[in-house]
Image (cartoon, protein in one colour):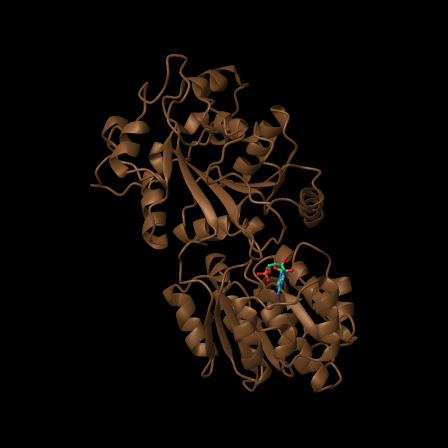
Length: 472
Ligand code: AMP
């Protein structure tokens, strides 16, 4: 098996890696590093969690230190573009960690904070600049920054850049750059616009793909729970009754939804924090720090805020709402199963989210195991007993005309619905087993089927040896 020592990296980098406890490169690192060291452009298809940051940071640090040159004033030798502030901070931290024996200058530039410190950092010149596109463009326009001398450009999470509308800013940034540069391009998926951008930017790139396009991380045990929109809160509380749900990322579709789900969890005695684009940078960092430190069990996030967040040992990912963009499902579940670990992901699906589920299964080319929790008496009782919250927090989706296309068949009633097969169950049996109503329950309304319970007839997820029990 390839070791870091086989890749031709400079000694100070190997020292830093040893200090970090890394001995074996991840597949993307083993495949990408030699090519990048040789000066080639790179097209990396990889999700977060694959070790892609080091796959570009290590060879960049090597190349910059092997060809020492003064950092250009108001400029940088290597520019990394990131879709979010959090990811920018993380990437810069990785450069500092791996490059700690090299004495290179690393700084970040992103919105939501004052310009002054960034202008100062830029003015003397940087070896590595990690930036979000919007603020970098501000600095370019105000002539605080210039990119003429930049030798290496990295585009990280390009598909997320697309989702955030960053493609025009990226092209603008590139227009400020010298064409003679090395380009490294990373994306988890390859929608047409991203493939076009890659085609325009990259010259004869080395292509490295560590997960087939849009297929779900195989190490993540997945489960869909069908539930009435208004009972999602009760179902979420039920999940948290399992102490194994100890570090859980909960995804909502909207910022308000994130706040409300966090409040609802707090109400149920579960420490929770919310993170989304309306929070200030310091609030976002505080929430993330509390989650990383284990002070809160649940971090409730929107897709954009959570993108690229690297938190070790996330035990579970819960999708309170299914995402509008099917690829986001893949990104969300990738938040657990980091760096070779396996993980568990649970997604709630209300009747009006069936179209979204179909789109997810199509994109990920899989049938996700499901359990039907509709018409569940305990959830009904818990919902009735819970203090009421405004509509959105109960999981209902705001009316969005575009979702239900005219002429489309309405969802079939529950008793006609077919279900994805359970991992270890025949499709027919599972459909029967998980049909809504009283079927599959004993006379106390307890589940009598085998998943997701522990086998003692207990309804909750406690002690379950289910596909989504956490992996240590
Ligand atoms: P990334 O995909 O770059 O966000 O990396 C995911 C996680 O894997 C981060 O926590 C890294 O610190 C960790 N990591 C990266 N490379 C290695 C490696 N070769 N061995 C062990 N952990 C790694």
